[in-house]
Amino acid sequence: MKARTLLRLAGTVAAALVATTVATAPAQAALGPAQPVEIQLRGYSSSGYETKVGHLSGTIRFDDGNALYRLDVTMNRQSSYVDTKLRIDVNGAPHQHFYQSGTINADFPYGGTVQNVRLVFEGLYFDGATNTAKPITRSAFYDNPFN
Image (cartoon, rainbow, N blue to C red; front, side, top):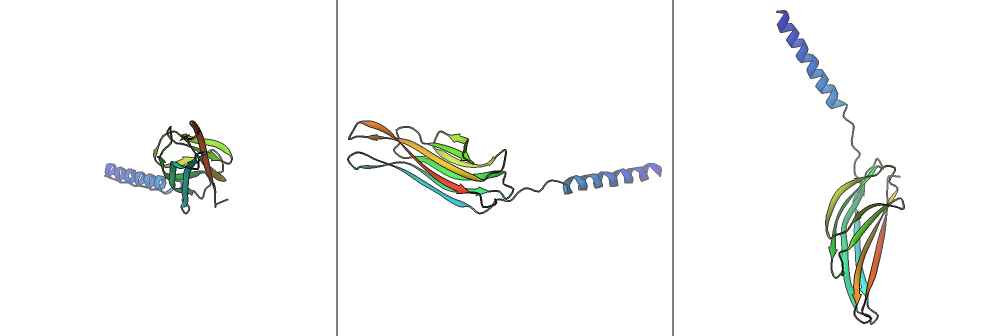
């Protein structure tokens, strides 16, 4: 009889511990609305010929806890001599780099408060009129709406 009572008591204590552990799990911050990302790299030769060098498109989102941002973008090399590059600056300082075309779908935690993000997209095109390779850079700035 005592053994059965002890088993019931142990089961009740174990269930209470599991319920407490699950109930105290930290809440995760929610992501805010998606902001569109659209950067087209275009190079122009000295004779006026336009070359589409690379294209970056997708969305960026910030979490309401100001600790991370989420990037869902596709980076395409169009006519760049080398693969396009993406640099991500947070609060004015370099944070991440990507050196080849493809899709980026990830959360990027930051060691402080994310106030803003700048996406810097780079490529290289050939100017046939002058026989030179020329770099091209475009950027876009995104302010965190939660701070």
